[in-house]
Length: 86
Image 1 (tube, rainbow, N blue to C red):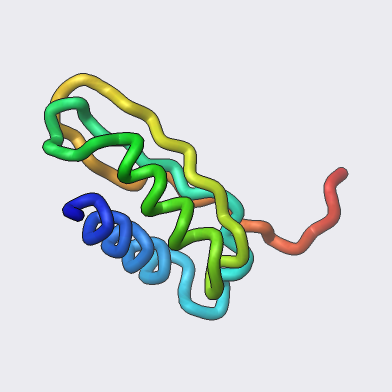
Image 2 (tube, one colour; image 1 turned 180 degrees about the vertical axis):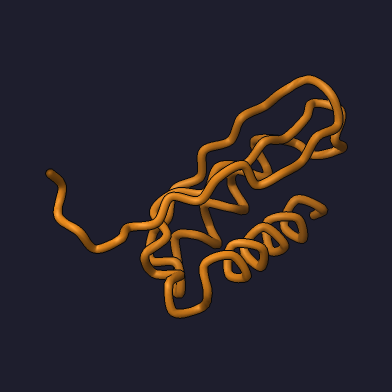
């Protein structure tokens, strides 16, 4: 399944951006995927949810934005900074 290898790479990118110690604090990963990217958005979402729902991520959500074209990118990472809400 091609989507699983892409999902693993998105997890690797997330780790590189926030650092391994911060992975449990990742709350949401935003991903943009194009309709012509060669990926099935539902399959990619399934794979990401499976990987992000387990340690070391501790239940991060995936926000998948499907767009025209062949784009594939991590658009944002939402990380719990530990501060209580105001």
